[in-house]
Length: 486
Image (cartoon, rainbow, N blue to C red; front, side, top):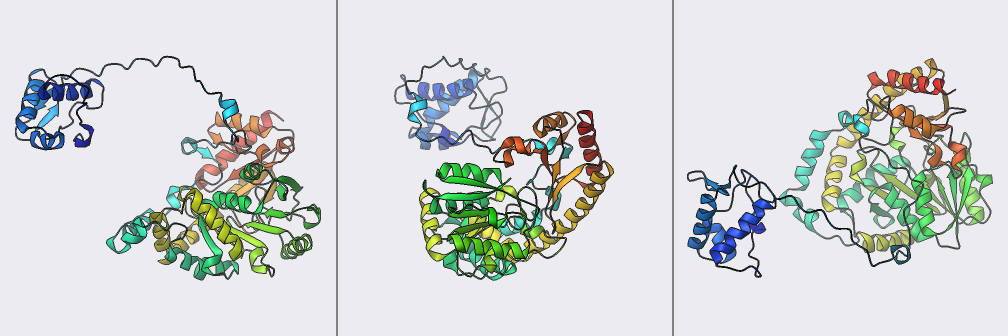
């Protein structure tokens, strides 16, 4: 490995001849551990040009370091850090420092302490991982994604890759959304009514910032997507939790002073309930009566492998009061962080301006790669593959759950990738901790509820990333852990 020439510079504060200063620069790099044994140094000509000194000066410095065993020479190959060079000097332990700033007073707003739990980063090392929202590498089309990325990196797409869109988006990706993705949900929109985001969570944050103030009220499902409550708390609006039932959010229970309604009608999070068509129409009527807006989070609609998905609320909306949120993070992979908002042109204009002031736009390379992956048919092929595999895993999990007499609190009528479970008398947080020792990961239910005590005996089991052959044993371990504390 060659040492980058840019790492060499002469400190103007060092004393001595140029030759001595070059020797000291290289020796200090070795002693500090920045230059390691076997790494190649720049040629004498290249280093001389870089430092603006004569080549003979660099040659003499290298010769002296060679004699002191800091460097070794390999024929015509050049100079390398010697295997016998002195070991790096241990760095002194930093002394305790007294900070002169009172950060408890200096911090104007706090964003820590929210309800969103931290998922284990090492989830893949657990043999029985039922964690929601993680990608299964065996289901992802790596080869075609790589080809699409290479195509996006080509000279033809250089401007799409390197340009600053400022507040705009990749026209190819927007065109595909308008012609293919949204019509599948019954949604017809114009380019000025669509905005790309860094995933659905970013879309929800932008929406909350634009629509809510300290004087407005947001109605949310209870239980709900836990990150949404953190987002709404940051907006400082009044939050009104509305308990859901087997059909999702009940319109009649929404408070009369509500300004914005947040809902997940296709797959209620986390109960997986699907809102029937009659209730969707009733929800729109309730919003119209309140003159309220609806934010529809349509996550996982692609995973409707048990039957055709219900029409999106946005497709039934005649007043333009529904803001639609979609994402590719669940259907492709979570690290993609690519989502979108569809709404009234006036709303999108404000959301676009806010996005531009915070992050401009999602990276051009990601947008163009996704545009090729979708437009070339690879996305549809992957959805078909995922639906087939998830349907198989769901059958296996249902059979195992039934065999061990575990209680299902909610299962998606059209598919999805998880079960919402109920374990009476259990504390799911403690249960999760015990199961980790058995190589099993589950998602405790407390963080989904406005009142965490209500969700203490609930937990979520996902089957998106666990192989079919491991599901029966994983469910058996969960059943044993519950039985031991019954």
